Length: 115
Length: 114
Image (cartoon, rainbow over all chains, first blue to last red):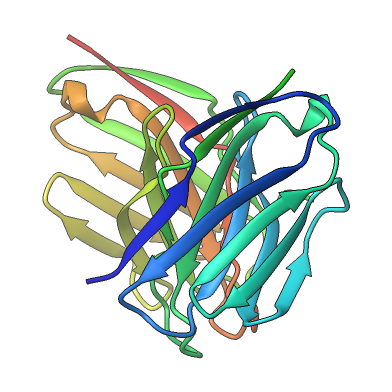
């Protein structure tokens, strides 16, 4: 069965410090991978998605970047965090098979607080 | 431009009664719709989905209805239970969308009163 791991669960970082959140998927190959952010009281905002190794698409210009060094690994990074980067970050995967409708599966999320 | 809208930020329902959560969309090209449930500090979990070739899909206490002409879908939970208290998101996608994105509503917080 497929599983998705996201860590850390919580993180408190000072303004200006770097960020690295990691997400790995097991039990599937060539998944589509996504990073979302949920700000307090708001919906899910898609930040990045990837349809393959090294292929990253950004949905929202911001202080963050993403990388996919391996097929089932997706990393969210920042060189210098801003206060506005605080939020709940979610990694998700969905099948990479074309024309196949399936649900997306989410990790447990990371609560990032920038102080 | 919000393509998927959940116009009710919150909904309060008595335990044992029916909960009806609504979602509207604007893009007629959407052909697959999903409902997710989310507890605080957790990732969303998939509940139920429906393809545009159907108008109803049922799974236990959960039923999703799709009205394509009105571009509207709803999630019915019967009977409502305390554990159903959570935020519910609807999402939509297009099969032909090469990036396989899900377009999300803003969520509705469901509160089940004992």
